[in-house]
Length: 275
Image 1: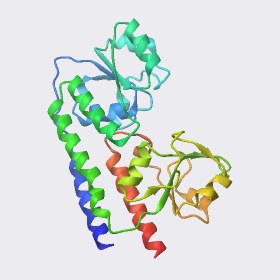
Image 2 (image 1 turned 45 degrees about the vertical axis):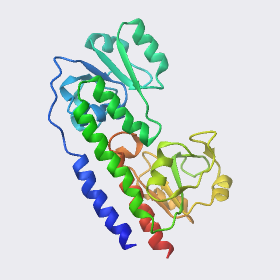
Image 3 (image 1 turned 60 degrees about the horizontal axis):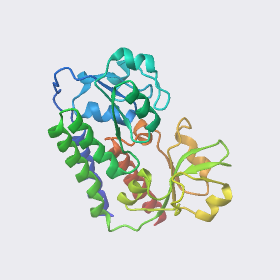
């Protein structure tokens, strides 16, 4: 357990370094629109705030991003606003295929980045950095986050509890949506030293019933359902549960290291209570 505590302290210090703002880039008037919150966070982390001329309505971090013109949602963009902003490049997700087609018809370049796994989030940083002339900053951020992800090697001392991540549910837990294998949250569970209690891989975020929850029988539930408050852990009794309501819990972006730290601390506390 002492080894785990040391690793958590080291991770906290490492994350502090990853969070440092880089110097503002100057890219000869490049005009960029972001169609996803994680893309917005990456652009700002790379010092590209001046190049950002518009963001999706869900882009709330960093706070100054919300001062940019909103161009609609991730899958319902405001085309008139996008055209009016005259972007050189629109950056979104690789799953926004229909939007990519429409932008091509408007002769606007589109870059779709992957975001479903931790390694894809890190790869998207390099992709965006190259596209926007911030390769050095992207490489620096990538290396810092890579070191963060590799910290799980220091956690081999503790047991591996079965962890269930719930991304949404109703008030009475009659319907729950959970993270299955090969997802962003599955990666975080593994990096934090746990194993995913939801073993299926056919559906990334399946719905389960109360009977399904009992069949899974997790050691720990991590509830990241939005707008339910920190007291939602009471709903999960008799299972150990913790609520995580920070905004970065829902965005697979460069702040994933903070969520990893939260996972590590939750698993550590679960181990202490299980002893």
